[in-house]
Image (cartoon, rainbow, N blue to C red; front, side, top):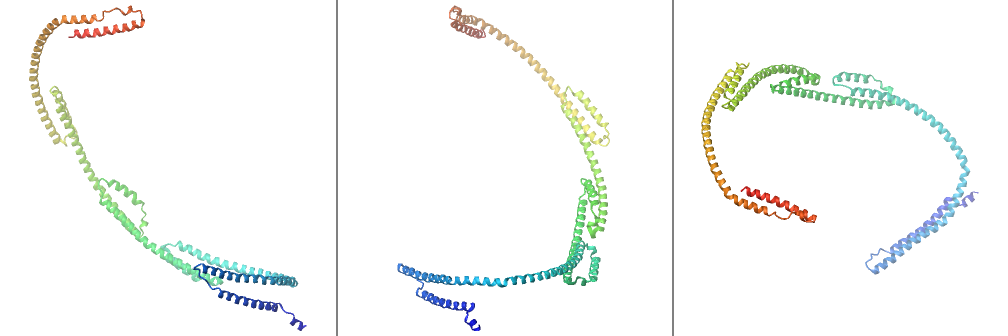
Length: 458
């Protein structure tokens, strides 16, 4: 039997012998391909001859390649039956051990499933414990993070002592495997705390600076406004101070709170003094304005009297003089007379002088007018006498002319009247002609009358 085992070739030996044969053939094919390339070197085409040679060389190279591809097809054709036979036999052999393999595989998987369930449960319990510890750590860190964010500058010192005391007393062993996680979170928390302290200190410095700026702006604003206070703006200044200052929270000036309160008192005192001073100025200005108003009224009063004097005519001298005297008596009885007596009397004296001068002018003008009127009346009488004399002369001449002209006018009128001496239109039998002739006669008569009138006017 051992001899038979040696004689029967194995699959490996068959494949190995076949591979050796194929390798020998491939080696022969390779040598042929190398010789083919060597015998058909690259040809550069420069003319028809080289073109034909290049085509021939290309055809030879293509033939070499296609022959190899044909050999590949031949080899595959010989190997395919072997491959198919081997495949069928192997598959039948596999079916011998496959049921036993599948049964054993199912048992292995059953046991592994039980082990996986136990492992998963252990991992779940461990993960829950880990998550619980992690949650506890995160809650501690979260609570302190929130407190740090809400921290104010005034509480930094007390908060820092409380922070350090809490974490010094904390037992890290209860965190087990997550102690490193706690250490990382605590380190991050300390960084947050340190950053927050820096921010608060920076904000505090900025707050002090801003408070100082606000205080200086407040101080400068009201110093300038009080410096520029006058009777025109003092009322609005009091309103603004009473409105704006009480609304300001002294705490917004921070470290300058006491200075703000003190300056506010000083400004209030200064505002009262300035207001009183402006009131005195205003009273003085009002008095001056009143006096100027009264003076203006006096001036306009006497200007109206001057206009009255200027409008006086000779006929109105007496009534106007009475009216002016009455107006002067009224102003002398006015309540402001004593205060403005000098100004009033000066204007009265001016009016009296103006009235006297105007009366003298009117009297002189009237005398001159009367003399001129006498001359004018005498001249008009003389002119009328001469006119009547001339009219009489002209009437006699016209009467003579009309007498001499009458025969000529009568002769002309007679001639004009003769122009219409013809048969009456009613004698014509034709109605149309009668109508036209009647119109003609009417127009002739109108013309005759017009020209006879013109002759009579000569």
